[in-house]
Length: 355
Ligand SMILES: [Zn+2]
Image 1 (cartoon, protein in one colour):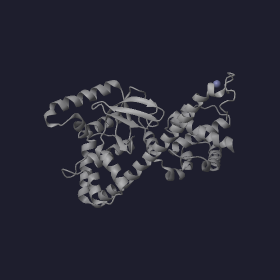
Image 2: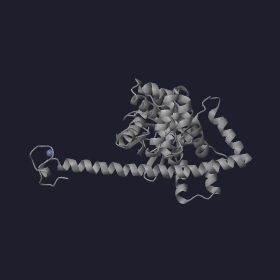
Image 3: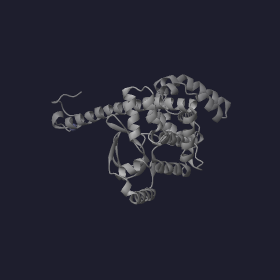
Image 4: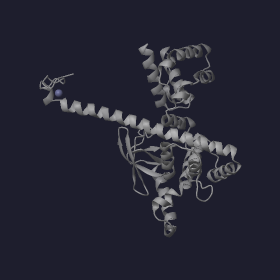
């Protein structure tokens, strides 16, 4: 650590206070700010997922034990999926949100409202569920990207939402469009379920379509905000369509859910061995990889899906014995992105080298 009157570390020959000190302090403050934001984001995710896990337990219980309720769920499912043939984690997750917060089961209640009225919920969890009820999916544009902070703006209402979802939105840029459902948790918005990027022409199509419906109905509608909030099904249908057309894989959804829920308990029991036995043909290499995994896995922070770890492990191991392989080929084998593979490989490398 330099003192104010020492010569500056940059070699300018000036005193530190007259040279790089301000710049260094500013950088230091920025790092501290980022850390505060990381903590804030983690807390918001935890608050959100605890409440949602509580709510879904109640709903599952009702569906299992209450015939009338089960009938409503079936009915909602038919409305939601129509004759669409999408059936994956993401679409079911969309359905769960739609059914819980948007689908009317008796003219004035959605299932989540019903649960709040009939089950004991602590104050914090209740607030989260109310926030979910007050949220709706919509069309957004990215207004600002700064570190963890991302501000998105609702195309219809112009309302801005402050999020710390840079990780979920990795690869997005300012000015790009997305379909999402932000939910307010404390002072930030959390992007729930899956966030789908859309091209400008799709954005224009959805926008025009919604606006013409709204204009046809404007006498009955207080404002556009209300109109889109009661037409969530419309947005979900688009999301399902986009899922159907895209090369979306469930592993992407799993990653974003793990990210959101910080599934640590679950990930401690990652069963990599089974997956490796399925994917790695050569007996000797398989045995060595399993051995390596048992040596290092306890030293890793095992968040995220197991196929990500398996891809990183295989890539690392094959490289270490001098094989010529590409990240792309291994990533494809495990159905993960190359950036996930690279990330896991790096984490494995750090542990191996630290031994
Ligand atoms: Zn300097």
